[in-house]
Image (cartoon, rainbow, N blue to C red; front, top):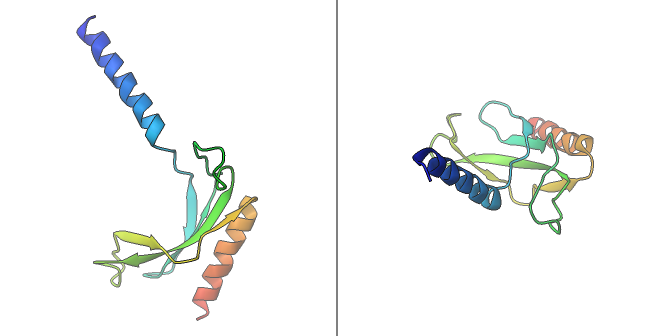
Length: 109
């Protein structure tokens, strides 16, 4: 086996291992004002390797809040999901509508 073939084989093995362990992340969009939380929804369906996972093929909406250094100055580097804010939806428009409703409620506080 030549050196080029060996390198190609190793690259293919690494690609297969990555496919086994990492699921592709669904794209998402969000609303945010200044330093506040992000009101997020998926713009494409969630795909998981486990066909029995209840999130498989659904859309999600959630609220992410900044924490740690920079969280109050608008330069947050870390975000966490707000407790009990995740919700699964069959339709993208439902996920978007919920995220927008939560955003509007937050703005009026």
